[in-house]
Image 1 (cartoon, rainbow, N blue to C red):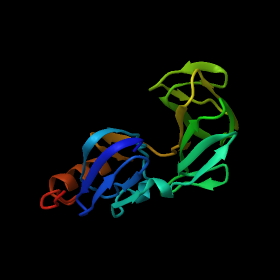
Image 2: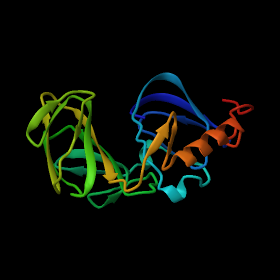
Image 3: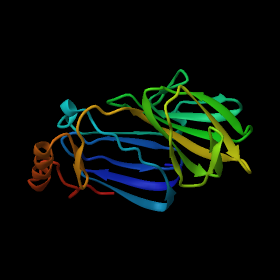
Length: 212
């Protein structure tokens, strides 16, 4: 949650309130129904990743983390929050089933930064606020997503007025089939059909009787 306030409710029986800078993690597993209701204007990001096939039908899980618990460090006078994965020797707070990274970079005192990245990963840069040059190409505007080419380092330059906010996101390449429909992402048509059946027969639970 970048800013704002939202109430979370799910079929595991959890209710939770997220405000500025907080983060939440949902492991869908065998199924979870959830609802997010804004209490005031909100702005945030969601990173969806696919569980490995052997974990598709594990127990669902929910966790939330307050803003002051998210690992943060300075690099070239800029602030970096490691929300998921490991980056520059800092481990993010969200659990991940596969090598994944979600990093929030806040340019405030310097307009240039060089970052080491995994040459074998599929990564992208998303602009939250301001403008940024990626490897001296651009500038990218608010809402733009740039997919990175292969390499083990990336140069980012804030363009124009500071502050500028971006996220670096992605991870290890997926080496199994992806089959999806609606909210379900599986590795086969059979498992996709099983997920729909579980939902229709109530095996994923219900939001009934869980007050806000």
